[in-house]
Image (cartoon, rainbow, N blue to C red; front, side, top):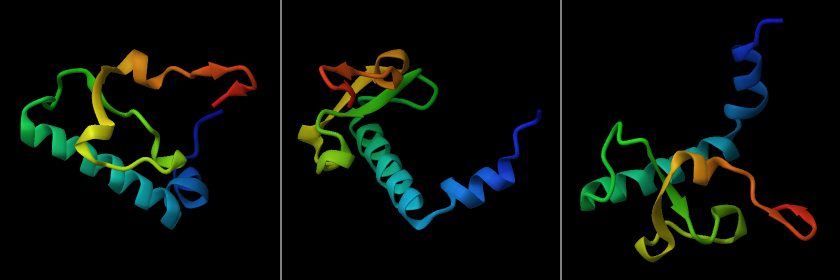
Length: 82
């Protein structure tokens, strides 16, 4: 079955909450690009030490550069996935 991208956008990615979160992630990346810590196409991700969903911010002290595989893997704690 083919993936219905239009429906997916309408039901999830196009919601105001998701648009705001995506804008915050993009702002964090731009901030680190300005300082030269990441570059377009370098295969690195900008990671929030304290996640935005847990009251984290885009302050430079809360940002770090990690590999894609490290940042996008699920972290499992004692009670399951964070």
